[in-house]
Length: 417
Figure 1: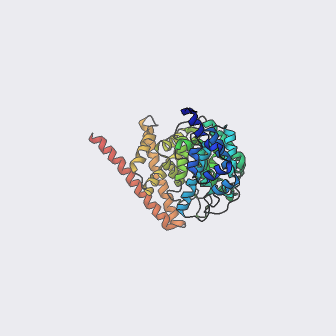
Figure 2: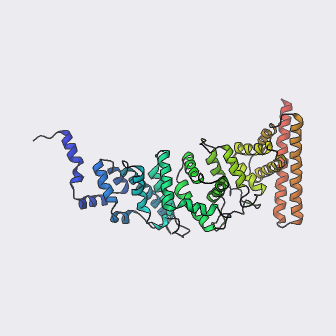
Figure 3: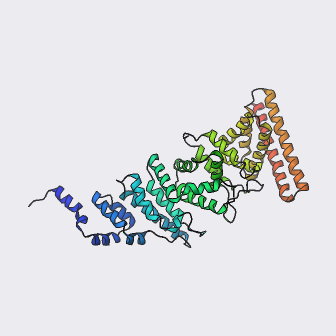
């Protein structure tokens, strides 16, 4: 009897199906996770067999690693990469299922891992959340926005995440410090940090913030990206006091830029970003002007200008001028080009239409320089940390000299032309 090419193809494709399940499982046991992942795409029948195989307790006990403590860096990278491979395997073998069924099949497989839950693991060196994040990111990569919203809702439901966030954003900052750290680590390592693309990270950050009122969005944003104390708790008092390290607010600035510097989404634009900043600057108490200036500098010229221009146009000129002095001081202390501050002041000066108004703006700025210098001098005489204050006075004088040097140079250059 002669067999056709299609008959031979079908016969070969069904070969694994004709094997006893025990034999098939023995073959799959010899294969790596990436190899099983590729095999699962051969046909619906093979996919079904792979799903049954990875649903066995023997496979779960073998492949779902639960050791996330006291590992070397290379071992950590290996385990995280293993969870990426698992994400791809589950992505491929559930490809034809509805989103809800895919999530039930995949995520529920990992609920029994203590290091993947918010409450269980107390080890400071645990990288369970990072592994879970690598798995979830690989699983949902390429899914459309509606599917990802369902993923977010599903994760919130099984972890009770919204309730846990509510418990920390509705009380005084720092009161529930342990829950704050839990929420930060879970959200950052599972939902936010695994995404290398800014637009994708923006989507997940917006999902986390959207359920809350403006003041609580600011509260949660600081929990997620604010500076930390050496022992790992949220440093709520850091921005309120002077002397915050120059890079302590970088992650917070990056989060603000992620939210508002890419494509605008309904309900998320520059106006809402400025409103969140205003709320942020009084948590838990009004921030020191140096901390506000440092965050604005880190947010870049466009965002910084918009914030300052909005304050000037709303009648807060004198307060804004003091903040500009601190921005110039931060540029000197943190090593930024003074040209950046000069261009910012020039842009703000254009808000005024007549020469007398422009002159008044410059005059008030010079008065603000003098006022801030007098305050620092008084602190250096009467307060504690005299040496630190003296160094800040030196920075202020140097920043003033550099700023005015750039101004005079620009004027002379204009005269020469």
